[in-house]
Length: 311
Image 1 (tube, rainbow, N blue to C red):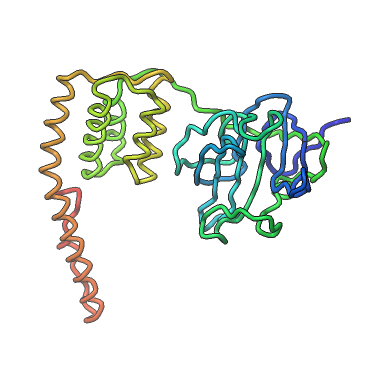
Image 2 (image 1 turned 45 degrees about the horizontal axis):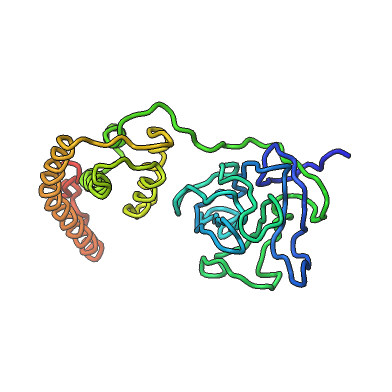
């Protein structure tokens, strides 16, 4: 019998999968809130939503799990979230990482309380629950993943989704860290003066913290996720790391380079901290002037506004 064709989207792409437990059925004396699907082995799992990595972790029952949520107010699936359980490994991407539909997430696994390799899928509109996953046994608190995916909620049926996966990023040509990352950001002019200064500080924090020892890519990504709150910048740096550093280690900066970097950062920090404050004062003054002008129907001369880039 031929496989059924997925009508919308699925976590497995070009790999046939079996519904081993239908969504919202009673199993072992309680409601099974998710949909269990399995391939013939540990296959790549992909995102069925365009959204950000909301949270991730490991628990005794769920094993390695991840929640991806759509936070775009203009999206028709705004607030929708998927929860994947029993992944083979912890998701390597940081919280806030942005996924497109078809982006690699992790590998199908059997961690936690699992009887075999499979993927457990749950869906909710977490916007209704203050953007937190809401655990309950009320069916209307959940979204039907089979309806979203476009498959029939029938246990024992085989399905296949013929899509276009975006595989796990692989490291390209190796470059030295951190100079390649900083120079790339500087060339593309994506970073303000304030961020230039902060980036130098981040490099020093990482190198000093490791005491000139080599640092794994995973440790580096964790540090960046910890130190940088700006999600756009965080995403750019993590993408650069994937492109620039191999899986095993980061080349260290020697002491002379580090001392020169420290001096450079000290100079920038002192120079631009005051400049940054001056800019903020100018911006505030302009806003006040605009408010007064609105009250008196007078226009504020734009020539009096100091451009941030010229300070």
